[in-house]
Length: 383
Image (cartoon, rainbow, N blue to C red; front, side):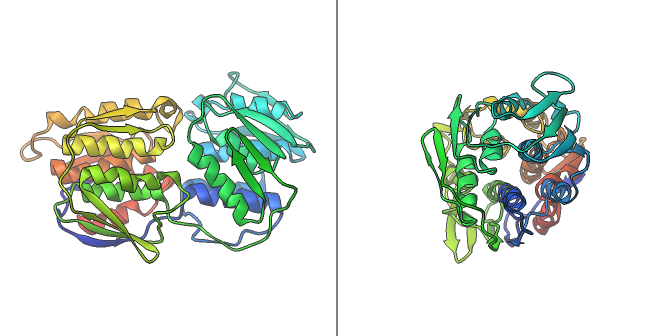
């Protein structure tokens, strides 16, 4: 895909996709509760569509493609469900670790076999009726291991290992509460009181990670303004922190009704910037691209789990952003050709750089459908 320039002054309304994280949790809760989901603003992402289709059909062989959340959430569900299933995915999925969740499920009697490399997909899951009263899981590599177990409502869950991405676990707890479950976290321990999911209507908030690309777009503008629909600064989504982080890039954020207004208002801060991604790993591509586009130096920490995402995101962004100094102008020269590395977040983080470089090309740009299918249509509004 070729992207040529962009207006430096704009005022746009942006219809973000529903939160993929909230949507997938709501679908799993509906499954465990045994009722049809009553979910408004359900994400239109590929991952959410895939999870909904699988929960409706439960084929013997389940291809989760490169959807880590889908794979991990289904692993617990299949372990507790009568029947035999093979759980697999794309080549990249077969490189993404799942051993700590398998160990936790085996500790309560689950019958799970590795069909390839130990600790990684594909898996054969021989489901059975299990009690999931008390369980521990190591979340060093992914908080999704804990969320997968929590959604099945154990009496207690202990979080082992290095604590990371805690906002996602707290989001799971919040979603469970919305469906009537009494649950709370005390440090490393989560307790679920005897209760059942209630069949209630749930409205999914727009996706804050997808919103981050609009913060980047506004940061690259001169007088840009974007109204982001159905978004709240007090959101339970951990990536809402992007509003605070982008103050350093000259961006002001205010709540107006059910929308968030993002505007370029301040000068960019050039000194002593640092960002810790331990709880917000999905924001790394956005922040890295923003720093590169603005010529800002910053210290990044909390990157250890990015190797396990849809791509090795640190390596991917390092490779792609290294191409920027080679391009002073696109006039009379070949356009910088960025590779998405098959990663939706890489593609969307790189796209706004057209505002700074003048024009770019992105390979495999359609991969954005994994989380934000209408991104290119919305982005066209300022081109």
